[in-house]
Image (cartoon, rainbow, N blue to C red):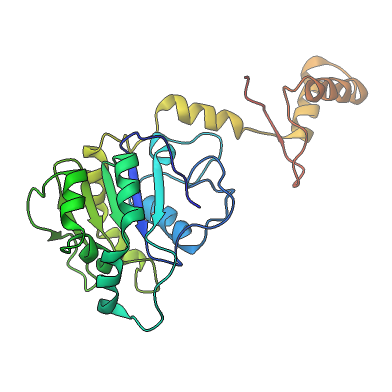
Length: 258
């Protein structure tokens, strides 16, 4: 199940039954080590298309990554219901979503289905939704001119984005048309869409690759020592933790100081 962070007015992603994140939760929703399924993977790709860096590190999560959560609307849908027929059903079983909104007080709600949005706007749910996120500040408006529909609607306490669920039709060309309104919504919610220099420096340090052969040769030449002494120095730095032990590809890294 997807990440449920402490209430920090972050992002809540609402997904259709059977399309939510799966697998073990790691440090955050976009953790590249986690196997969360095709929808989460598609969203990570979408965010990167929007110029919002996610899913690149397990240990250096951004504030956006730390405060993104997902809720699956319900466990399943009766087999005889299809398309618009599902709206009434969703409206009658939306308690899980209402509870997530109440718990997390998200600033941005990304709804991955027009049918789920219609359920939230129905007589069954609309009053409960507005109790949680305030009154609508205007009608929903389209945020792309392409055939697939994508909407945004601003409420007193949240910005709702209604996007199609990831599929073969949600091409990169379509997704990139949403860039400006998505970035505007995230910026208005208080997220910095550019990594801080400090965070980037930490990540860069952790990814410094040490060329073993070149380093040993440099030591031999500059320190006027033989290969055996150079190797001893190398082993000492590995033992002290300055240089990592090799990974599965035989690469060494400079270890970040704790």
